[in-house]
Length: 321
Figure 1: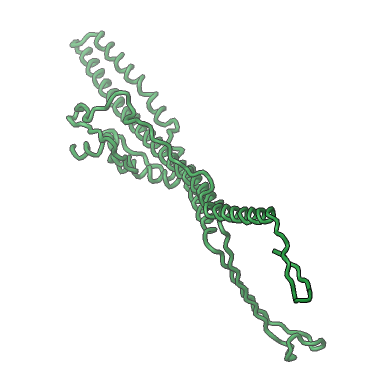
Figure 2: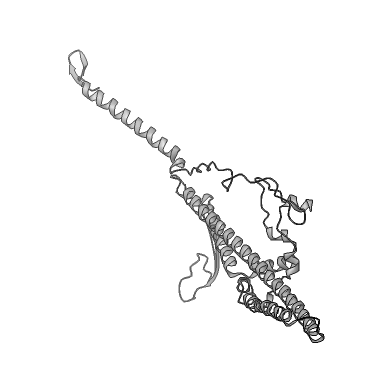
């Protein structure tokens, strides 16, 4: 609202200028726009922590078993009369190979886990991924840096001294403190931490896969070799028995108690038994898998009797037997 001042004989006179309605409407519109803009900016700042898509776990498949038909809770009795009990949802122990009850096999796997380069590389990668997560999480906290630099100086007497008291030897101590903090307004740092945590989870699963592959392949290779060595021992015993039987038949042939057809049949049986022996040592010594898993000086061969006489059973069955 404006006005004019004028003079007349009676005194001072004030005159009002007319105010336009359009100007009032424009002022109100500008105030309303400013208020709306401020409210929108405040809402964006408040909701900035929720920027970005949140991960949602997918629904688990509706599957209750791995086989087409339901498994029997109790298996049929084996030759020794024992039964295996299937535990639905039971967790397999981490050291599952200890169910074989073979100390030699346990020692072999312990050496492989300690010396296998593939597993050690996977574990090192996992540790690196975890350290990256810890380093990124450090940005959530303020960063403080302190610096202290003491110096002792001496100026030449030929020039004007630096201190006001005229001393040529003086000390200068400089202390500095810096404190900084990065506001995660838009949630970038938190999303980065989530990404690094996901990468750490991937590395953890890869380490678990390397662990399971190593132990499973080593157990299979050790049991296969133990089985082959057991077959070699059994075949050598069969050859020895057939050789003794052939000697007895030849002696009976000399005294006229047996005929030559019996001797020929026994010779054929002995030759057949000897023919099965050469492939077994070649299979047992043809660089089995576990030879490449641990150093040569640390190899421990589990005996066939300690493994073949035991069977992998479920915990409930082991308590029954």
